[in-house]
Amino acid sequence: MLARRVIPCLDVHDGKVTRGVSFGRAEAGELKNVGDPVELAVRYNDQGADEMVFFDITASAHGRASMIDVIERTADRCFMPLTVGGGIRAVEDMSAMLQAGADKVSINSSALADPDLIRAGAEKFGSQCIVVSIDAKKVAPDRWEVFAQGGRKATGLEAVAWAGRAVALGAGEIVLNSIDADGTKKGFDLVITRRISETVGVPVVASGGAGTLEHMADVLLEGRADAVLAASIFHFGTFTVGQVKDHLAARGLPVRRV
Image (tube, rainbow, N blue to C red; front, side):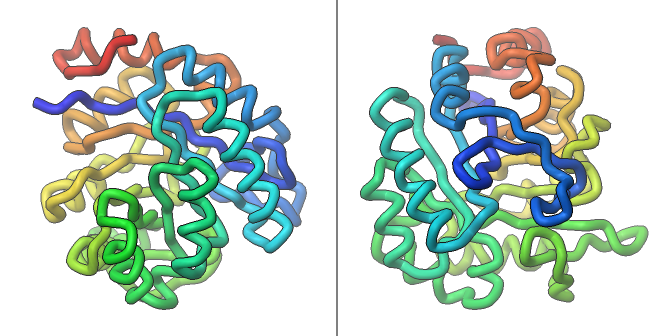
């Protein structure tokens, strides 16, 4: 059985790590400043994180330049794989991030606007480099809809169907973000996580809702996720990566030890 991955996530706005709840917006003053992204990445690297995800929530030309600098400085100091997303709209943007030191690029709204971007990226860099991030919201008792533009624009797409199409186009990994659970610390959406995990043939990273150690184990066991991504519980010192891995191991899940 493959080791389950524990992945801290850094949402970067204007060069600083921020945190909100249920996709809070920077322009509305709904984000809390957490700290310097490189210093936080080094902290999690030392704690034994399996990977690090950076999301550029500025997603502008200025933000992209700032993010390239963050990735270059992090790659110089950390040995874990790095994934970067936000504002990646073309193969050239992917290339810039990979050349800066990222191992994977994550696309979301740009893939929804142009699904062929998934195929183009996979053909040029390999499927292992292409992550499709899906922001899903429960809109009916048995329906989860995909949202674009940071959770603000409904697409009409059903989440499981979109995940399957993304993988068919060449995505090597899916990050599933629950809009409802994001930042609430009340637990992951186990139902939609399990449905997507059982449908696609690539790793699924669960995101949104981590508040306790049990939440992390539950989404890997009951949700069938391959990895768990979290932000608040790490940034505010609730748990370390090591504590999460100790708990997962106690629940019988294989983890990579430092």
